[in-house]
Length: 339
Image (cartoon, rainbow, N blue to C red; front, side, top):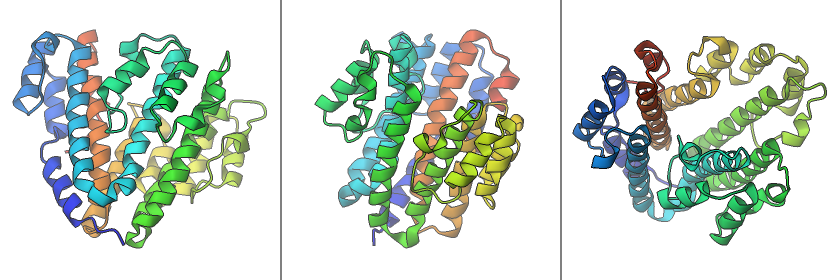
């Protein structure tokens, strides 16, 4: 059985350097971007002089800070690196999906990079190169050349003249789920890591339902990820058949009974920042509870990894919000990070 004591201790130590809710609320009240830059530097971020008045530059500083912490965890993992891939490849598949979507939509490279978390497998320079690719096929080809473990799942759909983004995201998620379950089962610890991956799969299946429930004949089975526990194919098909996202969410909430996720799906309209950010906050809440009740499990490590993702998203929200003159109240209400 894999032991996590040392990695958990290091994750807890690194966790003390996260910005946290109070610091992010302080940033949200900043008068301008240079003030945010000064505060970020005071809290350990490295902000280049040329980026002090740039929302994109400040977001880049956040990505680099988070990347360094993930790199540190990966270096400390030693023989558990493959198990740690449960976390790192989850970030990679999110990044790849966003980069493919950006390529299909011809979005500017800067926009494609927004909110992404660099990892040892896809560091900042790799993400930047992918963000400048002219098509989904080019993104896939580059990942294949780099031998990224999720690259093969992009073919052949990414190479089509008009690639189907939902099919690409499903293929990526299936490849991730298959690899993550295999790695988690080797990780042991009473199956907590396995249950975490199952929960991620359940959430992805719930998202697929919401993406398809407005169609006349939602093809749920074609976008189904095997390996979850709560969101069964039967439940997903029933939820999609409602034809209404709110009704589908209410039905899906039953799959998360006993978890903070149940409340998120039961009342999707009550999430000012959107469903996906509310789900992330609920996942962090659940893992922090598990970290207290099962401190020797990988829960502290998992919690820290998700809090890193939340920090990138929160810094992005604040710097772009300040840049665009968004109301402070809206910025604060949309924060994911907890105290």
